Image (cartoon, rainbow, N blue to C red; front, side, top):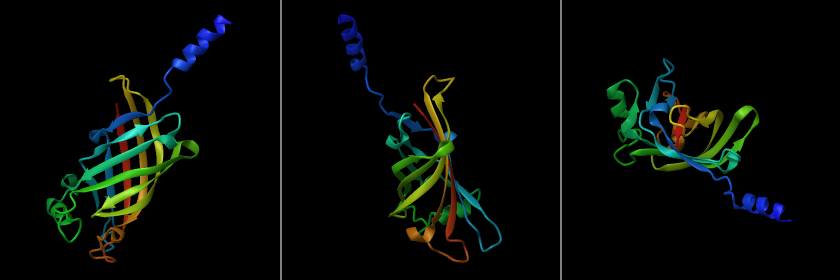
Length: 186
């Protein structure tokens, strides 16, 4: 009987698997959005500053969450005058709304490492529900740092007019194609 009690006590004294908090690594992440400009071209912009965290429960991804903040002072198109124009009151009004943010409200794992990431996207002071179509790139221990790392990609289509940023619609497309690659580490 003693031989059964000791292993049972050992098993029940082990900590339950807990979700791990990983910081978003900006240099290994990107949020890029693209739009059609008067039918002539499809320029793109990216956020070069990303902040946030990933709460990762590898055993049950539905218990995971992600929070990302994209300061508008990190918005880059490759054309400085356009960067500044997009930050004016006509568009994103960075003086009044300095950040864009996303906070997940649910994560659903699908086949072949696919994900549906539901959440609240806040742009221009307006919060809307969005669903990102994502996939797991890799979850493992980094061979260099020996700490947990995770990588994901996701895409979504959002309408800028839904957030009160409708200048020049429909000549300049309302739809923004958003692509995300996210690296996070412990």
